[in-house]
Structure formats: C-alpha cells, structure tokens
Image (cartoon, rainbow, N blue to C red; front, side, top):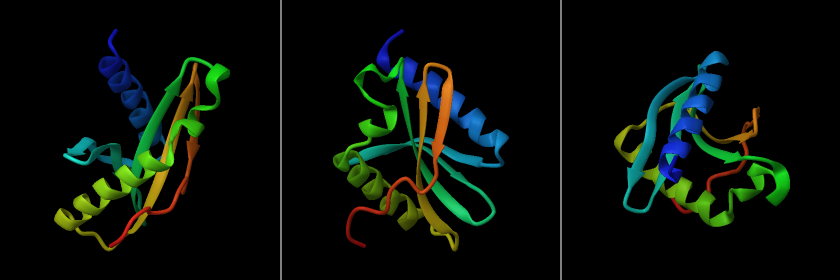
Amino acid sequence: MNKRKRGAAYEEIAASYLENYGIHIIKRNYRIRQGEVDLIGEDASHLIFFEVKYRKNNGYGAPYLAVSEGKKRKISTVSRHYLWYFPTNKQVRYDVVCICDTHIQWYKNAFDYRGNW
C-alpha cells in the first residue's frame, strides 16, 4: 500500500473515531496550494481542523511530535482560507488525532492558530 492510500485509510479510522464522539465531519483532505487539512469537523460549539498522524510504533517518537511548527503554520493558512469562504460563528479549534499501532489518542486544542489574520 502506498503512502497516500495508507494515509487515507488512517484518516478514515480517525473520522469514524471522531464521529463516535459526536463530531460531524464536514470535509476530508481540504487542499489549497499552500497546504492541506486532513479533516474538518464540528461539534455543537466548535469548528475543528484535524491533523491525523499515524505511526506503526513509538520507535521514532510519539506521532504527536511529528506535527512540526511548519505543519501548524500550513494548517493555520489552510484554515484561514476555509474560513474566508465558509465563515462561521463557532469557535475555531486545532486538534491532532494520533494513531499508534491500534491505539488512538485525540489531542483537543493541540495548538493555537499560527499566522496573521
């Protein structure tokens, strides 16, 4: 299985997991030229931009650590674009869903917006 197919499979696992916790997934793989957000979802009070990270094991560190400053800035840029075209009155949040082997960990409010409005 190539990297893109593997990523899509784990994003699907993450989406199902989040839906079980009441998150409505609005978009998958929202892309613009400057980057991509894996999942965009909402609950009663938040619009949430999700980064999904998978690792077979923690040999190279926890999956959460793979969300670099640069990736956070890209997600922030993509979120600004999304909000320009799809404004909301909900609070915006940035979460990370990590899958390590079969364990799923959801980090709510994992980072703040990185950039300028």
